[in-house]
Length: 196
Image 1 (cartoon, rainbow, N blue to C red):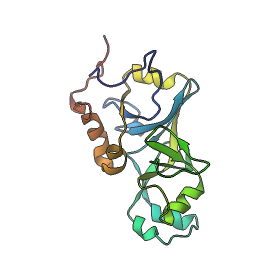
Image 2 (tube, helix red, strand yellow):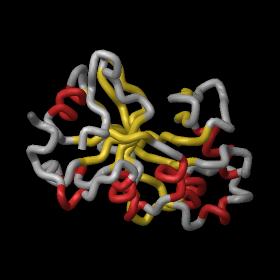
Image 3 (cartoon, rainbow, N blue to C red):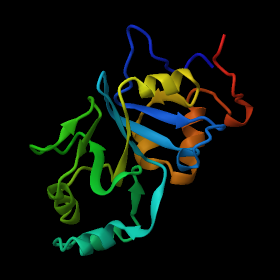
Image 4 (tube, one colour):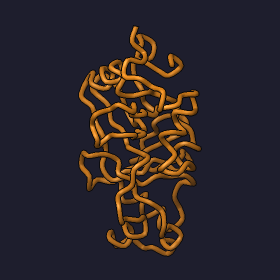
């Protein structure tokens, strides 16, 4: 159990990591959530839920609603739009591989970036975007010290993010498969795990 990350003097922040909701997390909104942490510092944290979708909304629908040129939108007719979190649910974010960069792109780490402008949606609809991506509406946020406290209180497990978990694993399997990367079966976790 101690193989997952906890804040220490050397590793206080979780930018670029995945947060996995513990099975006993009481907030139904975050039940079995997998959250990619886009930024975390002394001012707080921001993340995107990557394993929940917005019902009845595809990328093709979004392109049509935004009146973007959609020559390639048919390619994405079954591509899901993710529920990134409860904050600013109408604001869009694209979490993507680092093979795409414009002035508004924020490189999270050496593997992943986030772009939140209409330009990336336009690029995707025209087949000019990044190879791997997730389109999210809304985000999740924490105030200063809040995320560290929640991790210490065993609300979240923190694991390394990778391409397979983010972009290739189905939504229904992301939470369990993310736990499995560190050999954890969520069914055997207890509320007191990790406390001395």
